[in-house]
Image 1 (cartoon, rainbow, N blue to C red):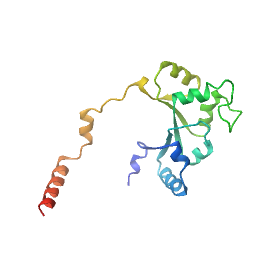
Image 2: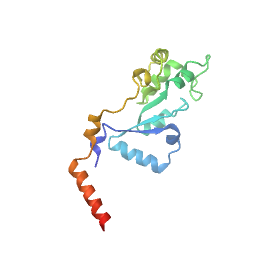
Image 3: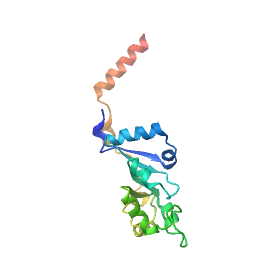
Image 4: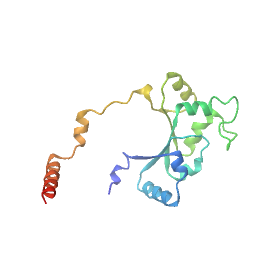
Length: 165
């Protein structure tokens, strides 16, 4: 009934939740993907991900904290960032995700130094306080989402009638 929301809604799951999903959850994700909905993984704890599984599950975005990206890709003293793929180097990580149809997003970007490091890693998308602190939604926007006054009045009248009974 709400297929029209497919371009405006992205379902986001934490990495632990995604990894713990069972057959029922996988089937439900597939049904949503068939309707055109997309998925994002966040709360990533390790970059050593199963990219093929993410691609099969119609995940399109991976949100990783900037600190974690820098720690696991740049601060390695020559070690491979992905134990399961020792041939992959730091600069190969973002292109690897793109080859699997995944867009990497650096989140919690708080400093310009992090931006420099993220750009060095070929990551094009970021979010965080550096780009703008969270703000309250303006009253006009909230008013647009309020239910129609007639609906509110009819609901109140209906509730009053139930209370009288």
